[in-house]
Amino acid sequence: MEKVALIYTEDYLKHETGRHVEKASRLIRTLEVLENSKIYRDKIIEILKPRKAIEEEVLKVHSENLLRKIRSLAFKGGGRIAPDTIVSKQSYDVALLAAGGGLRALELINEGRFNRVFVLCRPPGHHAEHNRAKGFCLINNVAITAKKALKMGLKKVFIFDFDAHHGDGTQKIFYEDPNVVYASIHQDGKTLYPRTGGIREVGAGGGEGYKINIPLPPRSTGTMALKCLKEIILPIMKEYKPEIILVSAGYDGHWHDRTSDLMYTTET
Image (cartoon, rainbow, N blue to C red):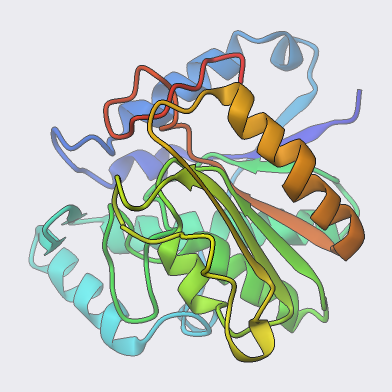
């Protein structure tokens, strides 16, 4: 079986959020499961460390004003940058490492060392906008990776997002960009934060038609989501022929996760 790189560092645990639902134990538990899996025992997974994104790379997506806000709040010891989003003393550096995880993955693929890379990182990113941190997200990791891919000369980038919550930040950043397809399967925004991701949100200007949203009603099962993936997303992907596929992997559609109303199972 082909090897898969896993990008991870214990520094990701230093983004301290207290009793917030987005907490370090998520990564600890995920790593425990992976380390007890057959693919880990068979040495299919190779764990590598991320690099830190430099501010120049982050500024391709975000404003200097946003970075200044995060830095300042971290320097003061932390606090809330948005009602639902926490910055701790080391969050700024950890956020750069999270973004750098995606960049390291891109570099490993570009060098031909791996075809598939999984980045196990936090804080998350897909709600973060150009000038706004929100939805547990400080900076938009997948958007920074996509921008880097474009700078490297790629012309066709495909972002697939299966988090239960629509990745409004990622979509907004690339809404008018025809070189980035953003496709999302999520709980209907009429019933869940961030209240976006309707089927009519298809992009604008040159990017019109390159944004695909599949909102699912509450209590939708994993079978329904997989049907949408197989019958809608994959055929579009096949026709588009992307040079790279980036995945925003959110597992909050699981029936046991209280942050959404979807009914995915572990098998999904």
